[in-house]
Amino acid sequence: MTRDDARQRARELAKEHRSRGDALGWFEKLYVEAQGNAEHVPWADDEPHPLLADWLARERIEAGGGDGGASPALRRALVIGAGLGDDAEGLARAGFAVTAFDLSPTAIEWCRRRFPSSRVDYRVADLFAAPVEWQGAFDLVFECYTLQALPLGVRERAFEPIARFVARGGTLLVVTRGTDAHENVDELPLPLTPAELARFEHLGLARTDWLDVVTGEQLPLRRFRAVYRR
Ligand SMILES: C[S@@+](CC[C@H](N)C(=O)[O-])C[C@H]1O[C@@H](n2cnc3c(N)ncnc32)[C@H](O)[C@@H]1O
Image (cartoon, rainbow, N blue to C red; front, side, top):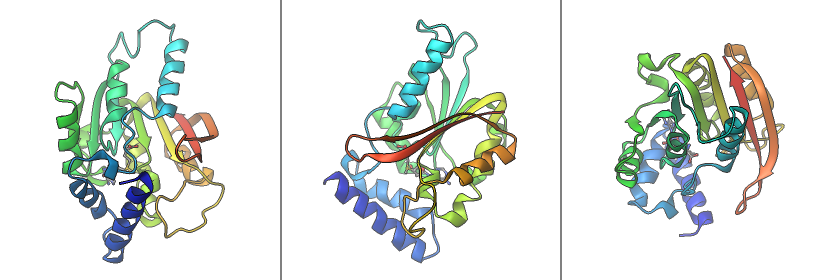
């Protein structure tokens, strides 16, 4: 299956489920259909997102270089919509104590199978009903491509729970497809606008960095990387 075929199938599944009033059920269906073959998962890249890797490298340099990563105090990171786990593993290698969750039990089982000796705590959880003890508990919250995969009506409710996970003094890092204005709101993934991302600033976070860039070897697209602090 080509990447284009995988994207097409994902769009079909999203549409089918949405027509039944179910905005989230297609993720699990997609992972089940993939039967362990990552070629069927259009966002599977087998490595941490380059915009995450770049940010981690820069943070390390600013923190004084070396292999210091997140130490000496092992900082806690939370990965939203973890998918197949590459970003979570990248954060664990950078020295974070990582919790990574996904709505899809099949995706989480897949992560555990892929990384049997991982230090990442992989959990099945719904962003909209996450454990209360996660509130304000993470020094770094990483969100990549989950918001853009949610239709507008669901997406607008997703900013608040994401913001709430960030501890005082903590950081939220968001990587997403970006646009100035929505075009076809019925097609997913739907890139985020700067105005949508500004919601985080109304939820007690301050934006500290903003990158607007065209990236991606296979699919060059406009992407935003936004950093917020509580
Ligand atoms: C487009 S994929 C991106 C996966 C991963 N972040 C990446 O960049 O490779 C979105 C992921 O979010 C998960 N997801 C969607 N809605 C969710 C929710 N309400 N709670 C937790 N995970 C969710 C999906 O199962 C899927 O794995």
